[in-house]
Image 1 (cartoon, rainbow, N blue to C red):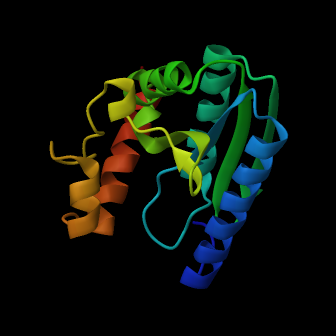
Image 2: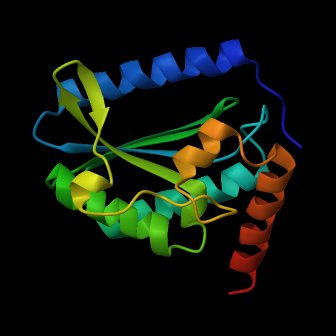
Length: 171
């Protein structure tokens, strides 16, 4: 079991991630930035599950997108991977969605494609790539709806994550 993090630590980490993303985009305007994090509900963001998903995500991104530069951070607040890719944001988003949708552990990866917008760094949406929203791990509703409504308990979600990891072991 991993160490719990506080809300303050998570918010600080999110701010630092946003700054890092902006710095990477500003320093490499001709390339597309991909950011990999791991979906893990609750106060523990770094454990054997998250590290396994992160390693699989890095491998999938490397083989699918051939990044020209990358940097990964194994933080108490969760894994963060940054990858610069030579390609359009729409094309890169499609490839990232394929990973999320088809990799055995893809449902546990959050792979964002980012660009500089009018008010800062913005993610390229699945709808911009002509794809439907991600579905909940447990039910068939859009994941954002379930997250906002807190429809499922942390225990239910962690049990489903363990099932996904177990299934991937047996492929």
